[in-house]
Length: 112
Length: 120
Image (cartoon, rainbow over all chains, first blue to last red; front, side, top):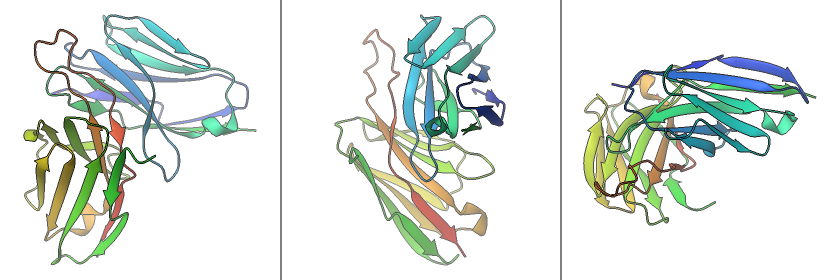
């Protein structure tokens, strides 16, 4: 089955700095890679996703890159703000009935 | 947000109790999921239902029993749980495309608020 590894498990940055979270996956058939943000006490919510036919996607301060050959994808947050503080999960999904495998999460803390 | 609702939001039960968690989605989706979120394994897929049929059982102990009577409702029946089953149980839904649609079956999952379960 799919195995997703996410690093780092915790990340602390100063407000205004950039943050990068990386994930690797094992199943080359995976073709959809969403990123979820979960604030304390709240549900996970999709913030950005990328499909395997695209190498990079950007939405304002967040971007995701995908390297299919190396089987890794990364989340980039620029000009971080305290409200970006949350747990971020990556996931990889193949065509098998929509099953997603999640990474273990990264706790991002943005210090003002 | 009321797209995916879960009840109860908090549940405390003894090891000999039987209880059920309920999930309802109002998004017209055709796939629903149960996840367990704990400190040990932050997001762990338990069950997947597509078009009311269970398509995934991720080696979940039989003390957890899912039920999907229609594409809008999903239940998780609990009996003789263990203290290590204490966790946040999240329901999610998504719109899965039919096989052969040519666009793959991947779509965003919308999560409910979760049920915080404590087993004494």
